[in-house]
Length: 444
Image 1 (spheres, rainbow, N blue to C red):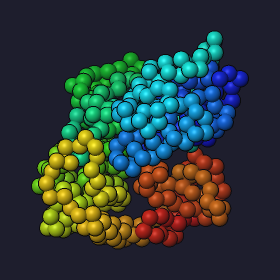
Image 2 (image 1 turned 180 degrees about the horizontal axis):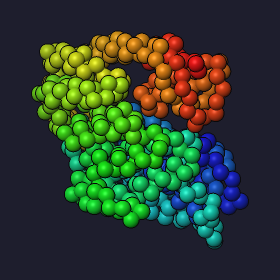
Image 3 (image 1 turned 60 degrees about the horizontal axis):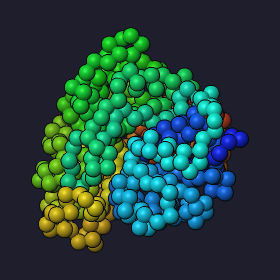
Image 4 (image 1 turned 90 degrees about the horizontal axis):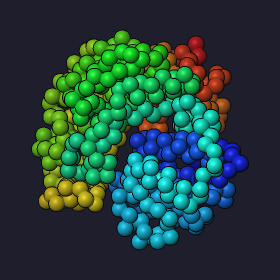
């Protein structure tokens, strides 16, 4: 159960379990905001809930198993459960595993979720809109928030089922996005994490239609949106950015300090044939050239990416080419996964599956190389001055903070020793040490 969602109310109380990616977290925040607006309280535990909503993930087998386990726990501990989210697209599977659930809806099905809650636990007679802060209910700490700018995806990557779960790309109106961002900043948010399935494709579905914010016309594309967000005076971090040519327009904004010098790019592989089999939209050699040009303009640019090893048909030579790509790209932050079939994905039909033992061996070799790269990059920061944002405190009393190079929960942290500051505070620090993941620093 989400302890951060605890809110007292004399009326009926709803428990909430949120699983999955940041996009799903934003969906949970929207549902919680609706519940509070209608006067429902949010229960911090199963015992105090009149009903429990479970927002599920259904992307890979481990996420499906986690979601089914969470539903089972809610059924055992409470017994009155509404299921929503990506796994909800497979209602038959959920109902076969847990036939007692009250209702099952798919992702973004906010009206259906509310209707199911209303049917089982009628709302108070009067709305309590004043109980909802202007920025809505957030499940993140007060000083950072996810800003979802679009839903769905137009790509048809062979290993992915996101379009079947969340549909094609639908971009939010640029005025709505900027209005939400302003409300978050006014509420004390110090960092916005811009997310979607494909952030760089923002506005494609609307043909970059001109929208309006505070009477100002703005073309709906990622560069204009990013420039406007950069006027808020807080950190703006971009996630899930494909390396399209028009992404080049974002780099000057980073050089000017309007965006954090950070790009999260899901590259997935470095060999042309494997990328083609994956149906990925970018060629490896062009990516390397683009990275080189970006770093010329922004030397402190941090690049994060994810990769898949052991994709069906991946030869030893193609894996070695991936290692060569990794070595040449010198990415700062990298996550990698051994390929596993996802029910409904086109890649399941590809021939020449890589044996499981070989996939694991390749994953270890990949991560060993990246660990060397990451350690070297962090060692090079020793002695430098960094601006960090405080997240909290470690058990030994050190501050736990993040630099511009560190996104929450997926990257490393900066441990600031011998200092005191509240979460959400910016500090200037000097880096004194490093591991392959984290930095150590002091306030000079």
